[in-house]
Image (cartoon, rainbow, N blue to C red; front, side, top):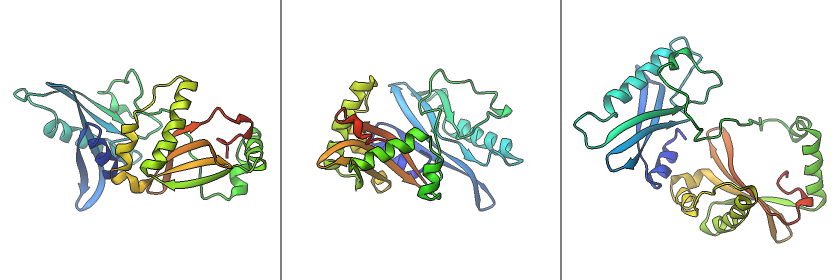
Length: 240
């Protein structure tokens, strides 16, 4: 979410953005893709999803952080004579512990992104991956394989989006959550993000039983949206 392709996608969904880079001589040492959303004719807020980005373990991390925030205040926060007022700045850096120099910020009342995640090292062998799973996970993967469930990865096309979204809506009803509109996904796969995106479909014969929307960037792949059918739950397709 701190990449140019994510900025491109968000611009298609009603946001605008500004990229800031913090340099030490000519070396990039930090920065932020700052998104801006106008919630009214005269008001907007600034948002840095998964950022600012810098080495928070470095000795001068506080100085770098303050420099970025001051740059945002001086260059992006609306002045008194501007027609649109900046209500607040929201940050969501990918860190485990909150530094003391975050004291000027207050904990938000809700999370815009998942606050809990799991990281799996894909450099492990398949045997190591399975060994590190809980017994139920290993067992259910085996169940799916014994039922001849297969998983295919497909490029993000509007046709595959239709297949994914039908299952996604079914999942939202079953688990009682508010789904993203199909235009959200359509904008993503029609932007530069499409080269970083793919669908994974778990099939039994010609039926799609489970699906995942996956975004790759750098050395990681993020499984952010998923869906599963109420058909044949005994096949354990989502586990595979």
